[in-house]
Structure formats: C-alpha cells, structure tokens
Amino acid sequence: MGGTYCNFTEADNELCDESQWNGRGFLNAKKVYGAYKVDSDADYIYIFIPTSSIEAESVTEYMVDRSNIRIVDQHYYNDDEKGWTFSLGTCVTDIVGNSDTEEYLTATIYLHDFYKEKIFSVFVDKGKDE
Image: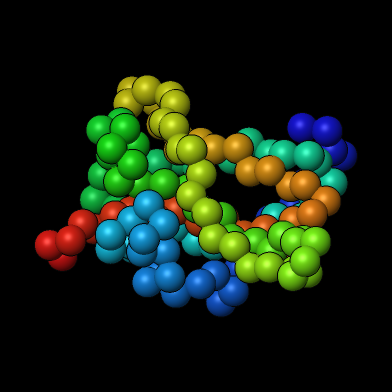
C-alpha cells in the first residue's frame, strides 16, 4: 500500500538463529519457511504465504489461534539516542482461504522510513517438550 514496487530477495543467511526468537512469542522456535528481505517504497505490504509451502506437517487455524505459528520480522530501526538498533518481532498472523482450495498465512509488514533491512519468515513453536 502506498508504493510503486515490492521485491523480495532470499535472506536465509541474514536471518538470526532460531534460538534468538525464543522468548519473543516462542518457547522453542523453528523456522519452517525461507527468509526474505523486502525492498519496497510502500508504507506497508500484505504478505500471503501458501500453507502448502510451509515446511511443517500441517498448518491449521488452531495453530494460528494459539500463536503456535507466526510470521516474524527482523529489522533495524532508527532510535534517536542509539542510532540504528537491531530488533526482532512477531507479526499478528491470520489464516485465510479454505481447505478446499488453498489457505494462506497472512500478516501486515510495515516499512516506515525509520526501518531498514526488513526480513520476514515463518516460525513454529515446538513447545517446551521438544
């Protein structure tokens, strides 16, 4: 929204180790989708990821409702006192579509001018027992 282009490039080597996400909405985080850097002049973008492309046994509405699967983002933001500061976050993630055709995980990724190097992926929470 509010832009003229949006490009994604693979960024698996730039995404933080899975363990860095523990305590940020996950007990035992596991990456189940590639990582992608966003290049856009938009204010924000809507991400739709087909559940069939996620490397998990299944993706259900129950998992989304329980926050066991989430779209995550990593970026730097411009702090007035500290300068460019590294940040990890979990997005509000929903599931749309229907099981007869295709279902998608979806989230809004904000791309304000005070953000740089925005990367997103999908993580599941394997829980404390695994």
